[in-house]
Every structure is written in C-alpha cells, then in structure tokens.
Image 1 (tube, rainbow, N blue to C red):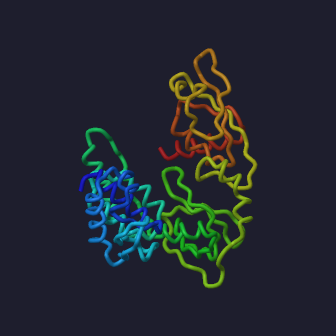
Image 2 (cartoon, rainbow, N blue to C red):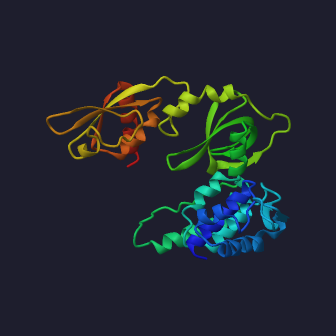
Image 3 (cartoon, rainbow, N blue to C red):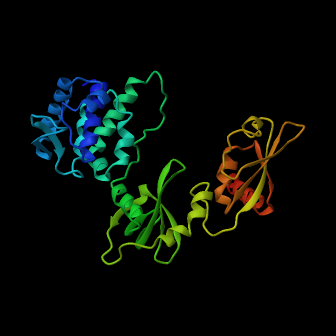
Length: 328
C-alpha cells in the first residue's frame, strides 16, 4: 500500500474513530481527500475488510436525496485504536514517521500490542537510511517498559502505585504518588512521592514490579503543585528537591573555550556566561544542589575545566581525584 493511500484511509479511520458517519457519495469528503466517489468507495471497502466486526452499515436518506445511501460508523469507538495502528504499520512500513507520535497520543494499550511491530518498522527505516544517519545507540535498548502503561495511567489520573525497586537493594515502596514520567540524562524516571512524603526519582530500568494499591486511589492536585518549581528547575537526575542551590564558578581554558562562549548552547539549564579572559579562557557559572549534580560534568572535561568557587565544591572534587589517584 502506497503512503498516499494509507494516509487517506487513516483520515477516514480517524473520522470514524471520532464518531462521524461516512459514505462514498459525500462530495465534501471527496473534495477533502481529492478522490472520486468510486475511489472513496474502495477505501471504505478496505476498511470494512479489516474492521467489519466493529462497523455498522445503515441505509439512510441524506441531504434530501431521494435514494437511501449506505453509511458507515464505528460501534465501539474506544476499542479499535490498536487494531487501526496495527493495520497501518503492517501495510505501510515505508512511511512510519507519522505513526510513532500517533501511538503515544492514543491509548497506552496500543503501545503494548504494537511494540514488536513498531521496533521492526523503526529498524527497517534505520536500515534504509544507513548512509544518511549514524545511530550509535538503539532507541529501544534497555527498554524494560512493560510498566510504562500502568505508570502513564497513574500519572495521568493522579493515582497511587506500590513499586518494587532494585538498585543496590530491593525496596518495596508502598502507595507512592505517581507525579511525572521524566526523560532526562538519556533515561526514563518516575518522579514520585513516597508515603513518608519524600520525593524520589526511580529509574524505570530498575523497577521490578508495579502493583495497584488495595485501598488508596487518587491523590489531590495540590500534591503535584508543590513540586512544579522543582520540575521546572531540575537539571539532571541528581538535582535535589527542597535544597537551596549554590552557585559554582568554573573556568574553561582556551583548548575548549569555543564550547562555553556567550551564546553557545549551555550544558546546564542554570549555566551563565560571565567573562572571556585575555588568555582565551571562559568563566561561567552553574547552580547546583549537591556536588554530584555537576562534578561528573567537570570530570569529563579534565584537565580543561577548573573550579574557582565554591571552596566546598573544590574540596569535594579534589577528594575524588585523590581517591582516583590512589587506585592507579
């Protein structure tokens, strides 16, 4: 099936999904799709071949016509999303770019049913364009996201979940409030408030089980509101909630100065250019709530970035360097 035909069939499916009735003699619809009524009739027949159990055909008098026309509509509006997407992906692997946002816009059950097809279609697309793109990481690797639908629902409906989490030990976090699904530092996290009213960022790949609570259901919107400023200001997964940020002053030497000049894309949300020195070095500032928020960045740029302030941050950095040297 070519991409043009697929897109037109999808538009018809979308109209049906929204509860509209369609019929081949509809001149406005013919004009919208730029097809004849015969072609429109063939498109509707294709839809009927796939979704006959979900579509009602009725004879009706429409627009004052003398003859009754056959109209089509869905009987179960919310149950056919996955089937529609599955049909489109299976029949149009050459043009799937528009399918991916469609999946995430629709019911999360569709993702669960379509995941293998989507992965294969994306892989095929990457293979076709291998001379154009250099992709060094698999967009689906480490995808332990079987819990994604449950967590998506919990965040959307402000619900509780009990989560079994394993990082350095196994934790059973009972009745956590699911606040946000956060994609940061190339990983997915669940931002949640524990029963002790502590904010946690749980990496999805370390979640072992998601359990519906027996008694608690929805939490109030004000719980989420108290974290809004944190979600706006967080720079990475190491940004702490409820900790007043400090300002670090850093200097990048002339070897890397081009990456830190005024107007260049910042590495941190809070990064601010301060000055360019005569020797070509650049001085800039970054806010942080704990050393771990920015020290990994400084270490990646060794020996080309120097910590000027704060003293505590500089001391923590020197301590890490001494530990590293002792292992050599």
